[in-house]
Length: 287
Image (cartoon, rainbow, N blue to C red; front, side, top):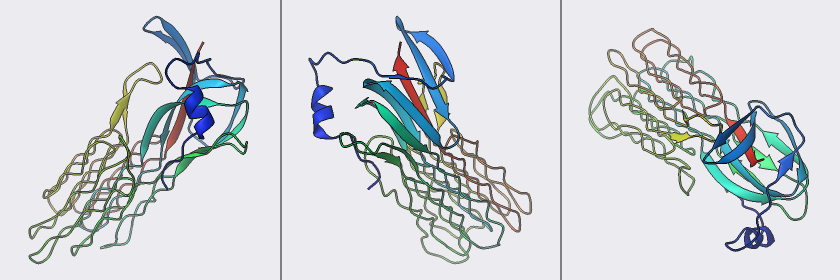
């Protein structure tokens, strides 16, 4: 299961008409800002740690899983990690934050990219269940290797012969959780785009990565959880929202942007694919 939610008692207490208190935490905030007549503080976790909630109440959160790496050898782009953004009512306690890693760069020719790992927000108390954002799938590779399944699927690799190679499937549901990787339906030495949180990877020769999601939870609009671009012998697709571009020939693809959950770019022959971007957890409270 990709996402668990707060138990029914907390869902009902956050229902319309309830006087919703704001949560507070004792950890040093990453930053503060004001918007729409309200003031907020937020804490960004770029590595695993703990959150100390000192006042029960509503908290806003973004959780993104680690993205997959691109395929090596006419490779598809890596899929983005799942994107989860919502407000929940949290009890007092210490919460464990786990940041998912991006899939490692694939350096073996004609081999699929590596999937990332999940990010999570958990509490051992009886009145709270856990939240988890699933990882992105690695990109496919030559000859016609499919993308790996994940929150967003990796793009399919190029084909030596006629037929169809499919992108990896999205195995999660819900708004912005993820999308499928792009397909390859023609003979080509270039891969398709990896899936993003809000759009599928491009089903094209050297396809672009699918779009992610732009959030202003930290006070500034930032795009995250986009797919990686497909790579190949002579063409390469663009990454989106933290996903990296594909690359051609023996030129290594760059890694996806850290702490965005973006997919890594696919690569031609015989370069190294782009690593997936690590995940992130961001929490925000009104002050």
